[in-house]
Length: 104
Image (cartoon, rainbow, N blue to C red; front, side, top):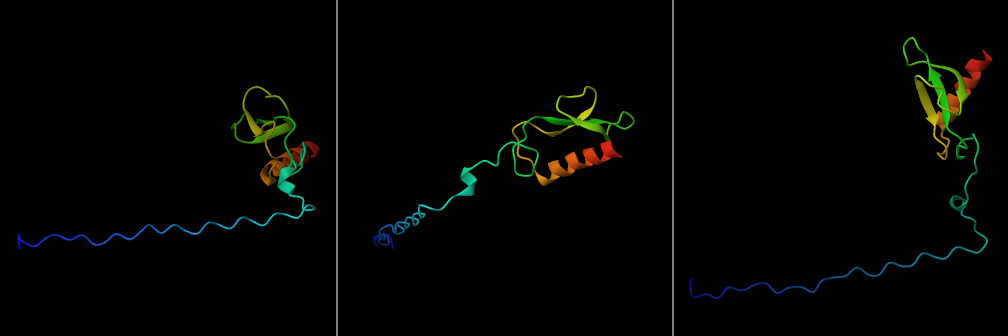
């Protein structure tokens, strides 16, 4: 078998995928809402205008107590949201809970 020549299988040309079709252009009257910010405020989807903190109970340092303040109250505190962050459902719940406990 030493006399038999080695053969390599013929190589196939590389297949290139067809070019992707360009997306259809949007009609001129279409408004894309993600291009516009929801603005600053404390509602869900808006940007927080300031930091929001709430002090923690000194007995176990786990229970939020007192009102929401916009500067660190000193000691132990929980930061609810940072300035410039988007207000989520969870942030809104925590802000509402602070309002309810302050009103009680």
